Length: 422
Image (cartoon, rainbow, N blue to C red; front, side):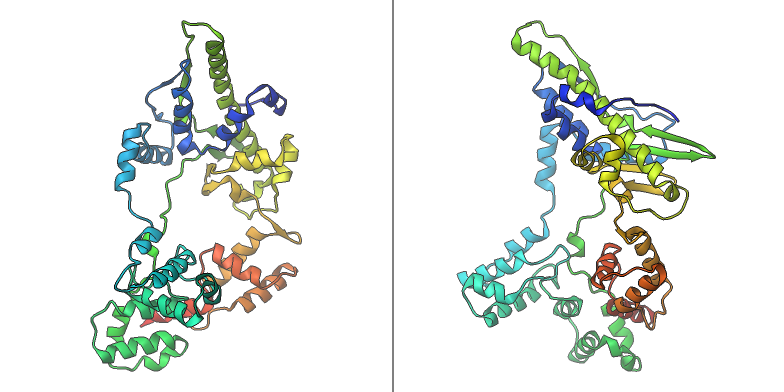
């Protein structure tokens, strides 16, 4: 196994915790910026410019490096320029539209802004109209009246309580005749019995419009997956295991002695030397955490499921506090043969002796093999999990795991299955 680190926690008291903890918690993609802020305030520190990716690096690392170079800059002017052209968020877009003529009065605008507060990132309204009515000192009817006006806002469909209402909102954006409008509305509201519409002479036209509807309504405003930089590379070659720290994105620090050697200069020189040690300590901490994760989750790395694992288990193994491990794994990633994973992915809760990761994998396999005419309900999934693993769990956990897997409810899946078969 390459590269050994022997740092111990007992070194920490001699180092500045004020510098150490943010440095440990910082993601690899933000590390260079974080270090630059420190070096700008320390005349004894200098960052050697430019990174070079060795030929031995994986293609993933090289592609990520190119992405990183295209999007990250230490120049404050570049950052300001980027911010000036960055797109508005969903909530900024909605807030800009709260004005006349849709919302002509101060009270209607106040209600609309409260409604925005309860819209999730997908664009759905998750609030309680009674609560908003109390907050705005109006009746429930007035709140609902204002919410219905969201049908005319961008993105179309936002503010609806579910995908059915969102689809109905979105129909307002289509220039269609009344017959087709009635057919589409009927299909959306009665999709459980969509088969009865199959013989309608305009069903194929309806399908074409249905495929243009956004689900969720704010999908174009949702955060896209960002490119991540793996902090470590784990590779198995036969029985040999190699763990490599991604040094390519660690800045090269140079500690310089200043001419004026007063107390201020002494302190800055000390802080500069300390930062170099802290960078090495960061590498050592992540390396040692990875060693424990590989040991505890070895079965995962050879193709099986994750086992139950808690932060405290790793903290006890390394002699750290649980809070330190929590900071260490924050926004950290590991690349192995199975892909790129967050360090947090390797920590799995348990129901009985079974990890939630294994339960979710089982549930995903069931849904992938379900009859598309009769998708499995959460009740069936709940019973199947309890029978398969011999555990007792509440049914709402099934809905939670399904949402974490980005799997729709059985009603939504049925609608999508039927739509795709038209």
